[in-house]
Amino acid sequence: MSRRRQIYEGKAKILYEGPEPGTLIQYFKDDATAFNAQKKGTISGKGVLNNRISEHVFTLLGTIGVPTHFIRRLNMREQLIRQVEIIPIEVVVRNVAAGSLSKRLGIEEGTQLPRTIIEYYYKDDALGDPLIADEHIACFGWASQEEMNDIADMAVRVNDFLCGLFAAIGIRLVDFKLEFGRIWENDYARVILADEISPDGCRLWDMTTNEKLDKDRFRRDLGGEAEAYQEVARRLGLLPEGENSVLDLDQHRAKRGK
Ligand code: TMP
Ligand code: ASP
Image 1: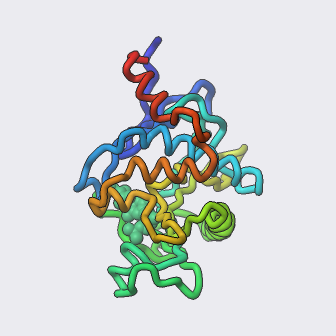
Image 2: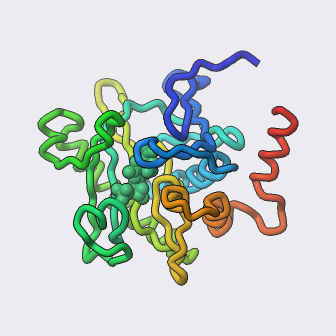
């Protein structure tokens, strides 16, 4: 098989040239990083689970009319996506205080917020993805006002939908991060949801026990991260009971060198 052209390698994913113009292949790695890659590790099987979870969530979002880059899953670790021009902003939606919000403002983790907060971070590893205001986005031209309106509207819709999706399986959606990209149609740019939605970029707490089912297990050295990701996939109905998990299949394939 001929090697595909690699377009970009990030901390948790690799992008390859896709089969048709305007498409890319998104490969999900097991690599995990935290604190701007100061902490590095691997979560065995994470790539397989995130590929599957993100496929599921993006497909559902598509059915309620949220435009996304997702086209179809290709195999255990890869999905076909539309090529976008990534908008260099990480959009964080928060329902419950946790993480950097709790630290920055001294609000106890787990405090239900009286209203949902949307925050923007400038996507720049060298600067450590600093928190920014709308004013910075407008001033430096990272996105237009119209694009930011679309982004905020989509973020709210995604949040409403995901809160319900997770609540139905006993999971509290504490917060999550979204990324958006532009696609060009003739001379017009349209903003669509890009990247992934998985336990890497969400805080997911069990509703009864408050157990963390997300990357905080890795960030905070709690252990059991692979099991936590698997539990999310299982509750979403992506790991059929009684069948060997996708992880077993992936490991089996890896052993056979495929
Ligand atoms: P924070 O509380 O550390 O700002 O994180 C808020 C949410 O955003 C949390 O669900 C994790 C996610 N996130 C990312 O996906 N990537 C990042 O680089 C950071 C800092 C957070
Ligand atoms: N994106 C972070 C990093 O740079 C990881 C995280 O905390 O989610 O390593």
